[in-house]
Image (cartoon, rainbow over all chains, first blue to last red; front, side, top):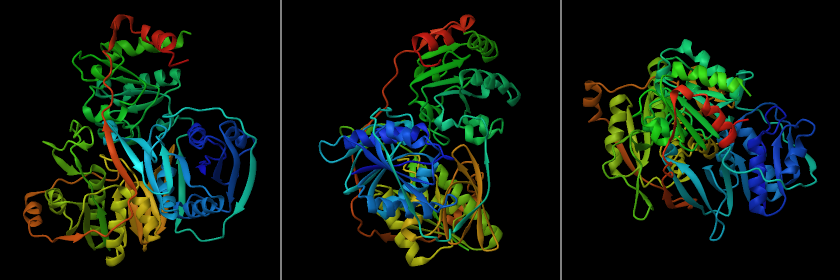
Length: 312
Length: 246
């Protein structure tokens, strides 16, 4: 039986959870069970139902995210519900608990999975390796399996079900960790979830010029990103650094402004569906990886793009 | 305090990745290998913590003898000693089982890993070790400190940051921003030659996965250039032809 772990983001199931539901019901070829921690908001269960979930098990009694307690509670629920293959969206939360659940249920674990499995001879998944520079096909050998899928890699597939909700309480166990404080960047689209990303590099000449990058990003509903030198120089926060040693992203559209396109940077963005490179150097390697290119000075091109994005 | 740093040996970040034997193997010919960059951050942080609080830093790698040169570099940076578990690092679960055995037998206060290795990008080690040892685990840390017998972390979460504390022992993974990696100096390089590098044999573990085939990303078609004086056209193209923005 196939199930999903539905990450509960303050009561909401994000698109990546619905992708996991679609993926699971596709490989199950029928409805699947979802497990979440904490009660979701009204109407959220219906979102799961739309993508093939006919049963949601809500684990109650865990007040905050502790990887150990979450994973133990989810593992127990998986055992009780007979799930053999668990699909999970590969977020930071998933990375904290999926390996723990894998140990708990003695499962083979594949992270970074970007396509549906080949089940003609066992269970083989395609995953991203070498930080965007390659892909690997890996066969999961154990009877139990966990597949952590990269957000924005697989489709949403409508498969309407009627959903039942079941609540299950955990035993009270003290957590080994304690949350001291949490800060969320309000209003900003997280880079890993963004469908459009506007990214800039040293060609912007200084942090004060990011106002144009941000304006274009706002107009396009995009997240902002940057190259490694820019984050190393402190022009932008490190969590905007995309590339081999930063974040690997795969938005629908990646616009790179004033970034030459070093191999390490390209590794982090090459899975983007459409890439636009803007650089004054016509020999910049980025043009070889791009679908569209503009050779020119960012300071002349950005205002034109902003103006065009305003005209609709 | 006794800290273990788990280290992967990976191709240098500038490597052009190719495959060989009908795309069934990574082509390591001519490739320079380095300490996985995130593990290098773990190592530096471990050194900072033991310099402040006293203690030792051990580096653990699962790999064959060709990993030794890179392990010596970790010793040159400042680790006190190293162990190499003599086996091909098959997958994350295999590696974690090997290192967990060593930890159980030797006891540590803190185990640090990288957020992920830049070759197989599993991102599993920290949480796998936590589960195998029944320890707390804290992923993608941008700050790590030890105060009054507790570990204090700042970590990335989806869409933000969080400060958390944990009891010891604990396993944590390093994210960029944790610290600046150190470059070994001549004294360190000389000292590394005689520091202990213990080679131990692997334990047998149930097979979890098999890598069958590799693939390179598809080459892009030639770029379509738009004249700089007509840059605004790009937005029209993205909207109406590529239909990628609204």
